[in-house]
Length: 468
Image 1 (cartoon, rainbow, N blue to C red):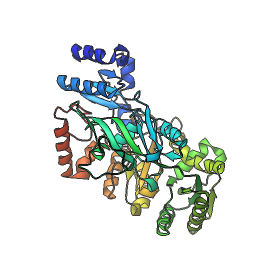
Image 2 (cartoon, helix red, strand yellow):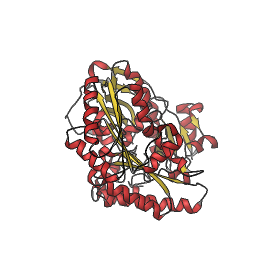
Image 3 (cartoon, one colour):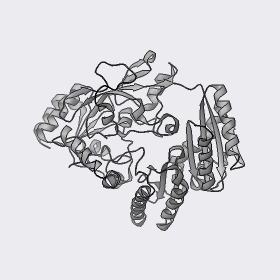
């Protein structure tokens, strides 16, 4: 990198917030994705801003010297989204982590992008409020990253994804200019004034701007939750049960599936769970007032009992937590399915139509068997979102190559099933090759937007099949 750039960055941020040490740079060379574990990409320099003004000045400097700039939150991404595939500057936003205002009277919160999701919800509890999007990485991931990837999670079946809670954003554009979307002074909960620029930024994965402030809608915190756990001898029975729940007018706050490998893994990690290792396990959550939850749990149990004779349920908080354990630990537990196993994040968040879920589940297992890969499947069956969890020996080159082929087949299966290659974790570098297949000529419109806002291709270049 040009020495003049380094000198000016040190003048802008101070030497203590400019990282050039090889060890430091290495920690920014990957995220949680299999792709970057195999091929990490180091930045040339890392900067740690603490204000919008610093970010704006850095972006202008990057434009002046044509240096790639990669925004990064907590690094929990699973598609290589924040990884500097073309070197340049990584901008670590994790220190911009202040909750600026909880405006409980207007049901909104104003925060910086580095606020961790769980920390925001802990702060909101005092006001009887919560921020509904609930990814599995809630204790680590930053909300700026959640907005950049339009994250969702366990409770999306009822509450939707992150997009629905973004009221406005302060954004540094690729030119270094600063805008406020959603109304520069607005505290309204909705607006149809002008182009919806806030939601243009949602899911743009840091390619169109750097989010520096967020105005988020929050909701009343449910006073009670209830859990129903049930097991099915056949995948098709689980699918039928889900369809019957919806036909019965029941909308759970969470509706999760675990396959046989997942229940085996959970039992290996927590033998006291003693889960039946059938083809499918459903974990269903209802929320609301005490009376509402009791009524919903009863109705859910009645519907589910038509398809299975294994049902456990509770609306008592401690018992609910015990019933949730299987789903909560499964991501970590799957590594135990193979001695010395390593769970791979590759094709892990496809989404297919509800009607094709059983077929998709079976075909994923067929793909895994064809490559002799141990694979567990779990996910948000209520909206068709599946997480595949291949487990391999990271030192076995043949298994690594087979895992790559398996991931390719799973992505193509999702498209074949009239679904999408990503429902939560984004495109990044992992799904870039499928963008044209999924979007057709609409991809050209995306490229045109990118060229218009970022004429020098400074922000997060090399991602989402956008111009390089």
